[in-house]
Image (cartoon, rainbow, N blue to C red):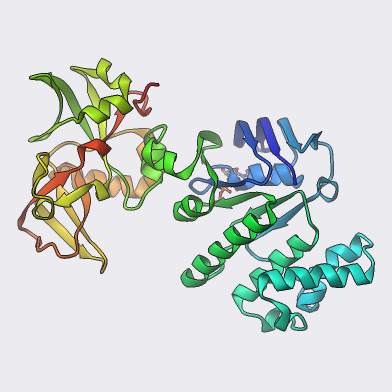
Length: 398
Ligand code: ATP
């Protein structure tokens, strides 16, 4: 077990592609850190540099006390788990798990003990004699995990290990990886493009965009205090609603205005974001998470409301999503485009040209709000988010 530290880690591929730029990270011993970001943001490249499978252009990788830049993968004492499992088809589950140990000349008896222990941990004893093709997807994934565990490495590096599994199995295996990692306390880096996986698994999460670190934080912090618009859009589903708003002091309170709507900010907001005071009379990007909006008939005491008309109603069973136009122009910010993808932005832009930007609210499943009908939405103003309109950075202050 060991800590992993990256300093100015950079990768420029021979064709000039800058995949990772000056990445600085310190991962604690025993910690599970998730690398997340959209396709092409450099997650896999970063992981492969740590594993020794990709040459480092600049910077250093340290595992424990040792800079490992020049060590081959075999000597880095780490175990990789890939999405395609990479099991040997002609070997049994047992032999697949024992193979790495055999290469390292671990004696037969010890191999048997180590594989037996891992199989027990993973609930695999019954299938040890089977070949991979006769195993289920989940069992294959467990064998791949077992193969990594038996080596008792200093760290696990996992690259989208769950992406070949169906949705239900993914959730099960996710919980299993979390449990195993906790039990074994092995420093782990887990790569995924799935923000739910990142939020549920990571002790801390690294959000990457175009090879650049956006934020390295605990999941709750990413959700509550996103560093910029990119993180705000990327974390949370449906995404945070964003709109350009004017801030102005009226009768001693700060008010945010967008379209026809006015929201009086809560005192708590300023305690959390002292820098906001300097935005009096300026434009900001206001963010409201869908879950911080509620059909006002379920929250009658709320003073802050948005009056709207329901465009689309989606019944999810446990809750209802309503989409509604807010009569204000959409946010045009490169960060937002990068987080939601160009196509989505095009579609939203077209819609916005016609009707202004559209918000989504996650409301009580008992709500009667129907399509084409008016609705009053209560806003939890303690949970509003604010971003600088130029830089896209979250407005907080210490
Ligand atoms: P995904 O989730 O799609 O796997 P990722 O975040 O893991 O994406 P990487 O695979 O690390 O991203 O790729 C980062 C960037 O480097 C991308 O722009 C990719 O096209 C580029 N890239 C990856 N491998 C090479 C290579 N061998 N030569 C040139 N460019 C590469």
